[in-house]
Length: 265
Image (tube, rainbow, N blue to C red):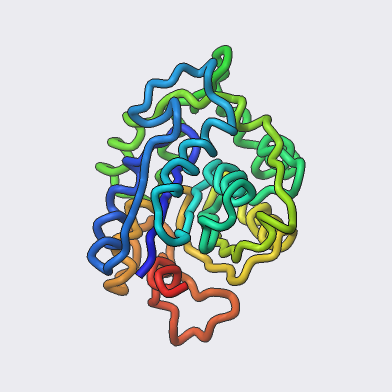
């Protein structure tokens, strides 16, 4: 079984993985999830936050591993795990991008997001306050948690914290001989209104991935992940199963969730 490190995205914290962690652990995996600096329960001041500080925190955790680990990044967390793989590729077994930003060399999250009309549309819901930004409260459920239960969506909205803008504007520095040598997997969320499905597809093509999976969910499938292994359909407001077949895997395997496949890498 694998050691799996889960890296959350903007505004969130390790809490967003709380339903997935027990399931992975019951399957024999070792799971590590922590708050990035200044997010979740971490109180590092916004003025001290950099993309490098995020990568430092993840590298510190990976340094404790005896063997390379699978590293999963959600949304902005994709930028972080790319930086980590560039720094310490010997500690990374595989990179998994969950509707995450998979940037090209010298590209920033903001640069890529604003290049895509659907994704750029979300910018109008940002409330900027100096070094940080938040999401307009009236659209949080619609943008992030529309497929979640009312309880999970309401609770999640109370846990979001201001996001330092520096992480959006800092380019990644990755090279083929380091970051490029790590196997990459992409999980698309087909109802995402934060990172458009078209942009997800583009990123996974620009930086080739071993496999591309698809979920018929919004940007935050965390409350749904625990249901995959039972084969249940997600409690989504939309039609279709929560888990769709990997694009190049026979349909008879569609019930096997990404967490199962990654554990066998």
